Image (cartoon, rainbow over all chains, first blue to last red; front, side, top):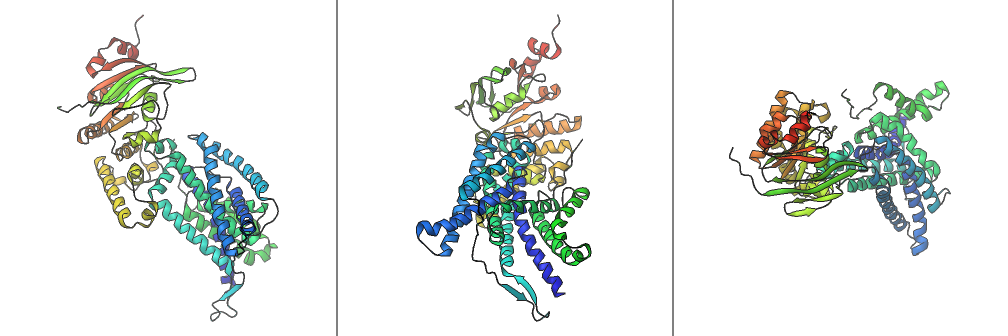
Length: 309
Length: 260
């Protein structure tokens, strides 16, 4: 029982991290109707900026405090992501108002390659580490209930809490504010949004800024777990099944989708793995996503698309 | 009918619009007076929607300008137009399909919401009061358009006739001075058309809103409009009261063809 709980909690926390990346996809899709292929590249770019500035700040200023370096690097990386968002709007999206979704998707594909290249040119292409001072030592819970207790990784726990707070803030922003309503309006119809006085360009900058911040948080947490390197872009690939499962238009969907996949991966690996020779963790999410595409293509919480013929 | 038609509120001067070699509009001038219902009619492809898009700021005409409440503009963007108090509806519905009827109409209040983002998110103090006020206004519109039963329904699931009403409701939520209606009755049956006519007349009457409307149904146009502009191949061929337009030779030949 304790072992089951341990696996479950581990899965939940891993799932929270998937959700964080999935959230980036959902945000941009909800608010501009674009499937943002560049989300993975943004995670890498943000993480690179964060890692490098944390290294550079003590060198430039002579202040050796790791706290200053971490906070400074975070702020600068956030500013970098704002500039990136503004540039994407100014150079790319502005010229594509009222275009098909496919056109916009292709544009984000272009942005992906550009950002991957630019990020590694500016910040370097070695493996860097982000150390935000998260405690690495595990803790034991419920020791009185089970023999030996339940082992939890503190780092994962903190990451999960950060992700949860971010998600709560974003949900409030989207559902309760007039800007959130404007974002959803722009996603549905550019022309109509303009006619009621919603400034399309500013909205797009806001959306990409928010997605940039989400990418930065995701990059920071994943980066501190895995190290900042090119393979961080594939984190986005792991979030893809999460988005399909939860529904591309739902913020809670991204969260619950992430949790289901995180838990599913771990439980199936531990309990089914031995019967099929293991390795389930790697493909579990994709098979689940495939099944969902067949049965319920809009995902668990996505809006059902009704086409009138 | 003893309604007070006021001064000229919107004056269109010598507008010409070209798309490459295609002349969509050639030297069009007309004015709209406060509180009147002004119709723009013409056969398909006459340039009616282009005209509306010029007023709305979606298209920028190559020549000419538009005077709105004494200020003259040669080009504007849709946001500025919206801020000045011009709202519009669309020929092919352009609603926010995934959002409920209430949320759709609430978007029309967006320009008027003043409290800041964080207050709104937390629903505290003035932000909560403001949201409630806007919500009340929107409820009035919903009552007025008789769509109470559907207020929580996602708009994409409503039948066409009701979607047209929501489109109108969203425009009304802006409390516009001038309302541009692009074929509000297209594709409707007789009953739905009568309802829509009633709404347009009531809006004009009760709120004093000036209405510029494009419509194909001649019966409707002749019944409700005060003055009519007739376009054909991007040129103005008639302008006047419904009676005058009906007897205009050019208009008759544009619609019925000339005898050779």
